[in-house]
Image 1: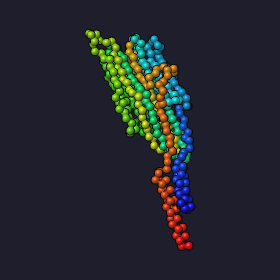
Image 2 (image 1 turned 180 degrees about the vertical axis):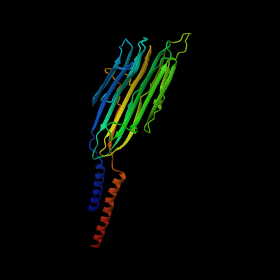
Image 3 (image 1 turned 90 degrees about the vertical axis):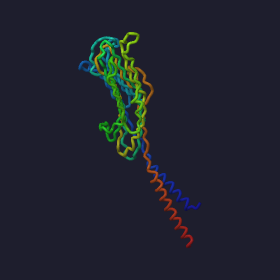
Length: 329
């Protein structure tokens, strides 16, 4: 191989490395925020509330009306730095006829990721997320068959650029809601809504397992209690968030909520995402709510090849001119 051709090839390789190397970003600064909230309102008055927000730490909240032996309304939420999240509500009259009016019992958890702006390099972001198993359940009695409870669960992911709090409607990339209203006569309302970015398959969330003990007479005797249960399997999703332009921050918010309301008359209502209920102490099943992947945005391959090819073309022209000069000499 001639020294001239070897030199041209070295320049071409170095040119290619320069193009691809320029796309390597600095390490992105990523922070997280965990929040938990719980509220219980009885007869128009908030009787208990709890909330906590921490930066890169564990947050849990528990609000309660009643006791283990008295009519009870309880709400809880937890968001851990490792990524586990849970929200639960329990309404339980403890086989009494207290006629307690629960305006609402509300437990929620939030996990936020902030990626600081990179002033030099563009990055590509992809998000994998996990929604744990969830359920709704209502037990009613035959003595007051028209008395209904309403239980509700919700999960939502928002993604926004250039904002620390996602407020625009288009920032919502995933939303799941389910509401159950039931009494002894059966289910009067079961609403399920699952929507989000293209490519997400919501089949499992839209087709839960529903069981109903019924109120039909057995052996001439009608059951005193009727229980309707709606079970949702866990759900995993992948979101391609696209390119983060230089100088643009990225915010991702994941919220979960459970809520219940109604009159307590020897009945029970349950709503939960990630089942354990005493969230201050009960262990959560290992899971990670979100996994964010940031990658450098490479220069287009065509541009890299074109640049390297341009050097080669120029080098070949130089070689031809040198060979012609040598023949003329």
